[in-house]
Structure formats: structure tokens, C-alpha cells
Length: 293
Image (cartoon, rainbow, N blue to C red; front, side, top):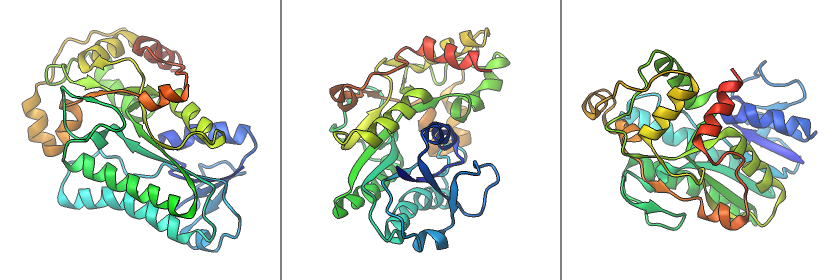
């Protein structure tokens, strides 16, 4: 297949590229400027090159987007987050001469907003707030491709666990014994192993019955304190010292809700699709990642 990839140098993008290159797909990576990190067989496209591309793309996989949790949500930061997701997706649509046959775009369980006690399926009404507004606008920009008879698949991701991303950022505090429960640890923690993310994406590439929106989270429902205890155990460390809610609110402001709140997210549509999770247990998932270090 001819595959256009945005976000190729990110955590998921780098992992996905390894899989796609093994299968001899022709990969086009959208880049700001030429990147030496990318495999020599990948065709790198700047915006100017994308606008002149005559090839018809089979699958556009949309992974781009600045890290939502890396900075406090100031007005300027919120604008940057919208531009790196919503504006970029629309810009790609407008730049392509030929509409792709399939679009696979990421979103996040933040779509459902700030909640702790509710259960969310793909069709459950969300709670208002910035994370919902951002994800909803991002999804809408991807769904616009469907106007050109393109098959659109959207995955709402939980915390993706692997040797990079969020888990890598938590690794040092946990190794130092500072990885206790956050804000009491009673909030739900939606997670998914990187292997299952890659499997879901590649399944959606080839299986045309994939269409619409899917919660891409492991079916096991756990609280944050369960995750903290399991991750510490995988590193052979204790998870004792708790982090109260108030300093997080003070430091991160509105963004602290990513850490202190979390609802039950159910992968109902993936289960209906017959998708089989390789890692449906947090201990097994974290043990697998620990073995790779």
C-alpha cells in the first residue's frame, strides 16, 4: 500500500514505521524538514511537496499532535494544541490532490471530558471542557475526509504504554520510589499496550469493516493506584509515597485533571469488531515492557 504518515517521528509513529517497513509498504512521511532519523526507504514530504504529490494514497495515518500533557494549558498552549491536531488535519486534506481511500486518525479518551464515576462507551454523551473540545474538533477534521467517500476510522486512545511516551517519563520517579498513588488513586486509569495500538491500526488498514470511532483501551478496568502499584512492582520498587491533588492543581492548573480524574472507558466497538487484545492485563503489559529494557 501507499501510506501517508503524519507524526512519523513520535512514539507511536516510530513503532508503526518498523511494522509497516517490514511489510514493504511505500511510506510517505509528512515532515517540516528532512529528518535523518527516518529510514532511507521512507519518502519524506514537506508541505510544498505534499501539494504537488500525484500519487494516490491508499491509507493516511494521522498521528501528529503536540503532547497535551507537556505544558500548562495557557491560552497560547491551547491554540498550539488545536493547530497541531485540528488545523494540521484540515490542511493535509486540502493539500492532497486525490482523497485517500482510508483515513486512520487518532483521538483520545479525553473526548469524554472530566469525569470519575461515569461509564463511557463510544456513543455516551461527553462532559464539557477543554479536553473534550480539542478531541471533538480533531475528530471532526478527520471525519471531513468522509465527504470524499473515504473510509474514516478514529481511535480514542488511553495512556499508551511502551518504552517511550508517558511510561518513560514516569520511569525515573518510580525507580526512585516516588511512584505512589496520585490524588488518592481512586480515579480510573485507561491504558493500552503499544502492541495493541499497532495491531488495531494495521487491522483497520486492511479490514474494510472497520469504520467509525473506537475506544482503543484495554478491556481491564483499573484505578490509578492499581497502575502505580503494578508499575512499581515491575521495576522492583515500592509505591508508597502518595501525591496529593492540591500541588498538582497549583502547578498544572486545568491540565491537572489529566492526572487526577479518570472515568471508566469501555472498548465496546472493538469488542464487537472481534479485536483480540494481546495485552488485556496490566501486570502482563508492564512486565513485557520491563523485559525490554
